[in-house]
Image 1 (cartoon, rainbow, N blue to C red):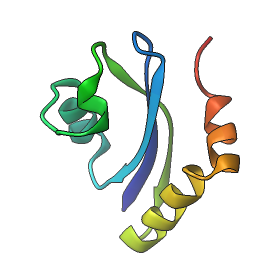
Image 2: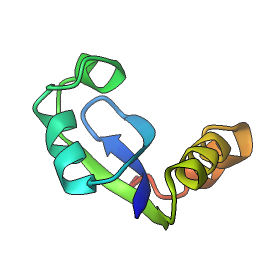
Image 3: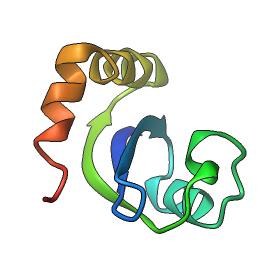
Length: 82
């Protein structure tokens, strides 16, 4: 089982969409800056604002791509705390 997720950083007011097999571990990696990339550039803590399960990695990648589209981003923005 895979998880498609969106995380938000309140300090930087940024969000990120991704997919993983272990959401708890991946969130830890984002918060400790163990992953080089987009999320490591920002100070502050990342927290999960949205997640959904996918049966296969192929389905998770497809859903991640959908959420990264314009309509998908509009959908995710509804979950960002204001």
